[in-house]
Image (cartoon, rainbow, N blue to C red; front, top):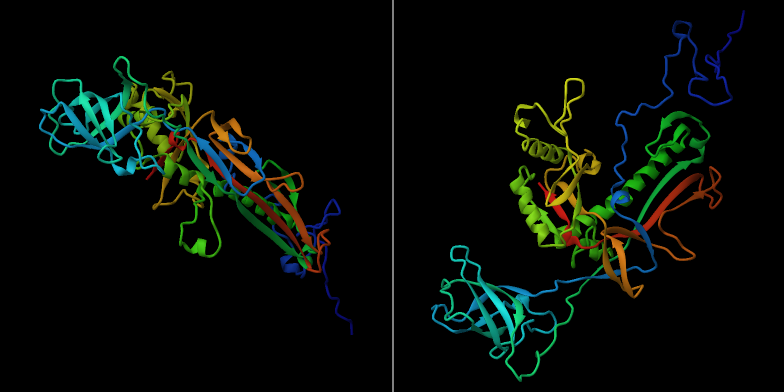
Amino acid sequence: MAGNLVAGGVALQPSAEQVALSTNYITTFDFLNQYLPDTYEKEFERYGNRTISGFLRMVGAEMPSNSDLIKWAEQGRLHTKYTACTLATYTGAETTQTITVPAAQLIPGTGTIAVRVGQTILLSDETAASGFSNKAIVTTVGVGAANEFTVAYYEATQAAYAGASTVSMFAYGSEFAKGTTGMAGSLESDDIFLENNPIILKDRYAVNGSDMAQIGWVEVTSENGANGYLWYLKSEHETRLRFDDMLETAMIEAIPAAVGSGATTAGFIGSEGIFSAVGARGNVWNGGYPVDLLDFDAIISRLDKQGAIEENAIFLDRQFGFAIDDMLAAQNSYGANGTSYGLFDNDQEMALNLGFSGFRRGYDFYKTDWKYLNDPTMRGDLVGGKVSGLLVPAGSTSVYDQVLGKNAKRPFLHVRYRASQTEDRRYKTWMTGSAGGAQTSSLDAMEVNFLSERCVCTLGANNFVLFQG
């Protein structure tokens, strides 16, 4: 009686090279199913470039720091203006007047006001219906209370302000009689001191030694431009890409932990990201997409009151970009009929250009699609807390660096990472375990560790605009 011949791992498709492939061996053999399926060894990039980082590389810089607290000073306003001031009387017949500055506008730490005897001021009624104004000279300061001062009108009588009026005031000059002493008191610089602290970010990829012994290769084209064959380290590679993205998104989204919050109780302090800084100290547009020039005129009017930076970039989502394109196209008399867009020279031999890269209206505005706001795995599908764009001023600003002890030019946005001569925590990666070349412990695995310690400094946040909704 003949014995049975057991078919083992028969090589059906030998490899041209000594490389372990999934098609080299099979576990069973059947004459009725003797053909292997056609396989693609190259990974299909169904989502294209999946990374969302790159925003900070375009608009900022990275600088080392050896402290766990970053502090800087920003210039305050050169001139002083008070709003919502109240008048003692409203008859319209006064030649003098006592004016009270709101307590919330007193100089912090001193409880005084930046008004001095001899200054000439302009008073303006904040009620749009009347629009009255007066010019006056300050005669006394802080007689009845620290936030009060008395003026004498240059006009024959006070303007007939409404009974419930509040006024704004600012000093435009001074006047002194002959033979009198000089200006009493002096004004200190109104610097604004700000700070931020770095946070530690970590990630890890692990694979056990047994899985490392089962080799499988996939040909890939990586988001960072690399291409070729990847073994089990493909997942490690994607962990690295994911960590790179998180280094940027953490700088965008981080918020300081509030006093009494669960994070504070657990020992975490958070950090001030870009959105948090602009939301607290910058300008926020929450009326949906600016869809016409009147909307942008309101934004431009706000920028006039801030730093008036000549060039600005708007990083926006797709719908906001379309809204700007439609707004600009409507300025062309033929745009409504779809005959021309863009440079207004489209013809039948070229593809119709339905987009704009920027425009000028008082300032230069350049628009750029921001993948972070479009990606459905990040902010692309949000409803609550939606951000549709961020206006970033171009160039740099001058701040007082407390470490250097002098003024220094810094980009409006820049990242500070912890570093010294012996420890650089900008981007650390190392292997632990006992597999894959690592020989640091008895763990039968290879662990790839990632670490960074950093924060973002948003200088001159008053020049930024955050578009919400």
